[in-house]
Image 1 (cartoon, helix red, strand yellow):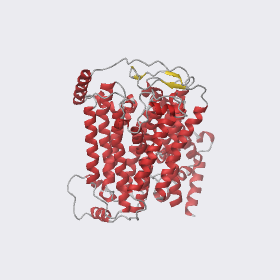
Image 2 (tube, rainbow, N blue to C red):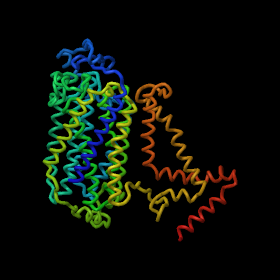
Image 3 (cartoon, one colour):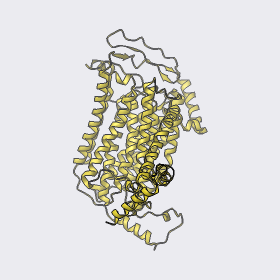
Image 4 (tube, rainbow, N blue to C red):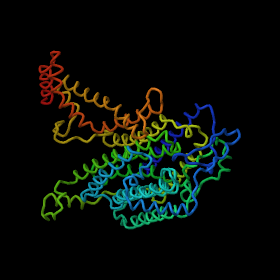
Length: 580
């Protein structure tokens, strides 16, 4: 109960910080604008054209619809949509990444293989993973598959991205929420119930909702539903008259604003995912295997990916912040890689070997197999249930709805969401995951005295041969230090051109870092993301420094008379210290 309350409190503080940051930035704006009523919209080259006027002045004249389709045209278009699905062209296959253009599409495609690797290692029998929790991770693949036809319909029928078609957007995200919910229930039941219920019920419910969404995709264009038809008919949305009676409101929503049900789905996914990270962390106690905590850290980039999506929606999906979609895809790829590494470490700690890849029947008397079977048979250590699932679900629902109303209608009193700011967007994306990481860092520090340990690379030195460390680099004295500095400089030497190329792939133009503040912030954001990826590769960077140290000693330090003699002295000193 304490963990759930603390994590929920931390999540609330994170989103409160987000809104406070938005309010502080908004306070610096001098003009107050209002968007034209959401019922008036148009499409110009796939973008929304929205009228702007002063809240206290004459309202903007409604914008006429430039493109309308009668029911017959909708039916014909829908038929062509499903024909295009059958064609399975490469263009349509990328429809689920329609916002991200080339770079995001590449990232999303590349993220599939590491996720399959993650699922393989996670399901290893020696891990004793809960059946329902394992299915929850697997069901995310079903969510990914559903974004393909929904993205195709968004582009082919409505001429816009999936993020702007609320009923398809909310329906697809609901499947992700169900996946996360199954993970939470599965891991929680395994830790509190010696005889957890079978996974069949949760599996059946998940697939039933999936079939319902498939029916929605088929029926939506046939009815036809409006491009901005709200998910679940906008259940809980306030009427425009009620919204304008709120004292702080100075804007009306643009046409592509998320409905309350869709916002609730997003916040539910984010909150549930943080809760799932905590349950995975606690699974290390149930299994007495500390490597499970590594999976929590591996899930952190995926948490950041979800924050990218919420930030993009907070600003009403503007093209000026298109880089957020590429960052979302990049974090997805990174998260799938880190989760795959974490799952591999868990499986290795529980007896997985290369022999497991052998497709032929294994010997019943294999010592390795018998050891794995014995590990799999060990019962989990359960703890008494402190809070019922119903009470926890009630808290989650109340928190989710509270944030949904706060963001949807609270941001109407700010100028910031209507004037995209790349710096604030990056602060949101970096800030909330950073708070989550700090929470788990503190947890680790309280439990073991160390907040975070990077996994070692076996067989490359270090203490007792466990892994590389900075001490190995220091053994080379000045040569090792210079080599390490050179490897770090190499990263920064390529960071800017790589970040510039990423921006070009996302937006179609090269960055103007001198005159355009948005481009500057975007490039810095990509470099920031790259720096965090580089931190995960510390063992490889140390290895590169060790490999470079002899060359530095022979070709640089020797020119100044500080070569072999100094290196030998430092190695001898380090060896003497180890013997002592």
